[in-house]
Image (cartoon, rainbow, N blue to C red; front, side, top):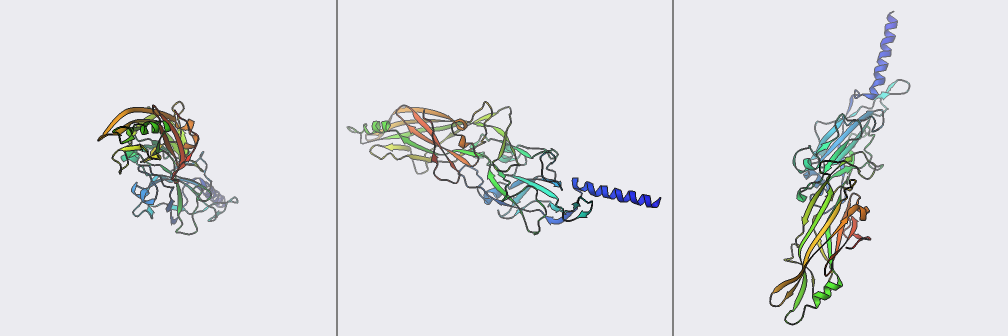
Amino acid sequence: MRRFYIHILTFSLLLTACSSEDTKSAADSGVAISFSTTMPTATRAANAINNNTHLKNAGGFGVFGCYTGLHRYSDSNVRPDFMYNEHVTSADGTTWTYSPLKYWPNGEGVTSDGSVTGDNPHYVSFMAYAPYSDNYTGASGYCIPSFSLQGEIGNPWLTYRIHNDVSQQVDLLYARHSDEHPILDQTKPLATDSKVLFDFKHALACVGDKITIICSSGIKNQVDSRVVGGVTQARVVIKNFKIEYTLTSKARLVLWNQGEPNWQAIFSEAPICERTVTLVPNATDTELVVYTSGSTGDPYTITGKGVFYIPKDLQGYPQTAKITVTYCISTYNGSWIDDSENTGSATISMKEEYPDAYQPGKHLYFNITLNQMSIGLTAAIAPWEVADPVEIEGIEE
């Protein structure tokens, strides 16, 4: 009888060992999990995160970690309960820290023959975003107001909301999984100083940080013809320049991805939002003069801070940009006198007419032609790291 009880006890221990692959009961290895980053290419948009210093100043990044034991990552049976929006910060933009530390699982598991070995890996998958949000504080909390629940099964996600105040807009980065920089199914490293590397990329697109204005031959001829009698000079002056954006107000970014950011459309009480950006002359200019009589009429370029937008239309709610320009011919006869004032406007539907602009890390630039009674509008697209956009086929109105 005693021998029978011993066999039952042995069988019970084996069942306990087998169940360890589906729990977090494996002791940690004493090797702390640490992180490093690579940053995306630069953009001129306001509040952009272009380097580790920007990332540090923006408050660091958030990490979700999914422990899956001996099983590899699958969105049908994981939840981010190993790390949930873990706040990672830096004092110098080089070394990233968080507290309390998490440690790599010890790597022990049950083999097919029922024996326990330290050779079987225990997997942890990581996902990250930036800047860190605590759901309610400051601009980051406004723009990133919610996350999937800690106990929610499936890929972790966050909600991103466009800020109506351009000066408060928040860049959004996500860590991309790739063969070069894997973040899924990570195991205890052989070297204790190894780090999980987050390859951050821009999740948003940007529009309108560069506007090129040219005058048509018709308006140039009209200006040149004004230089008669006592008029010694004439020019075209921009009196008002306004861009009105209609943008997707909110969308969900699923943090698991293998390339481009995984945006999902969601609806809210306000599925779209509107922004108005009024441009002023460059710092060296007292007036925005785009053509002077007798000159070559080279294009006039306005550079400013771009506006971030979610590269995803909601059904029935296209994202648009409407540009309105008020301009006049001004003549000089002892003093400058403005006349022939005209206001023209044109609108583009960004995705419909420029689908390539609906890729993260792309800029949509505007090219404007001033005519005698109207304006023409086309666009050009370039990656953020390219200074000069490549012209693509556009429209004129």
